[in-house]
Length: 311
Image 1: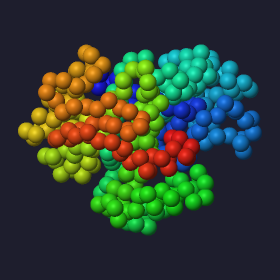
Image 2 (image 1 turned 90 degrees about the vertical axis):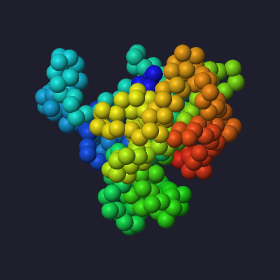
Image 3 (image 1 turned 90 degrees about the horizontal axis):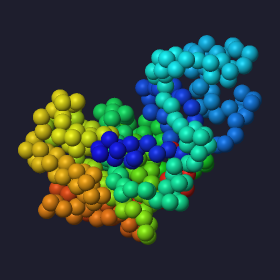
Image 4 (image 1 turned 180 degrees about the horizontal axis):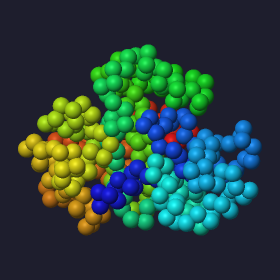
């Protein structure tokens, strides 16, 4: 169920794209490929993802073929599998496999089953070091790099919503920007699309716990996928021994997830009540050592991000 939850909350995506070369750097949200049904034949009009695909075509030995598409189609499955290391693949919308944009289908029909969805407060701390030593000028430059491609004034508006002075450091401010644009607000979008009258219930969470007994892990805050160690009660993947309160938190989370898997409702067992999601107040459960109901998390920021091309 945790795997289902993670897939649901992270991987619904509205891009039409193909293999993107992996990088040690996070892809700036403003440069991510946007949904488009057209392919242009001229190199000058190719999208960033189409240009990135050329290295995969070259690795397959098809870049010089008279019919590149026929060459690629003739590759064996084993060849493709062996070549795909280091590339990220996305499903192409409009195919027989995925005829409709999943987000549109969710808006139109809701989820066919109860939906548990959430995000972590510092998702991007796993990808961007909070201990990088970034200063305010570096933070401003990074925000402009990400958002200038989306239009004049966009980066400045983002900076006004995320002043570095409101965070422990400029590095944490950038983590907040990237986390909210790519995770927090997308989670809200999906929850809003799925919820509604006469639809299956939606249960949203915000995970805010920072690892307590490790200085290095604690500095990452509630980093990407950290909650899964607690859901499964298995910390071997990070070589960590939880504290007493963290063991209790893990037990509480297992209870929520098991009840949801069994009944479609995470509530019960004497646990703190998890409010059903409602788009009018964006109700959710904040998960930490102590659980608490929360409404409208980062709505001002997400309202602005929703006016921009989505990641």
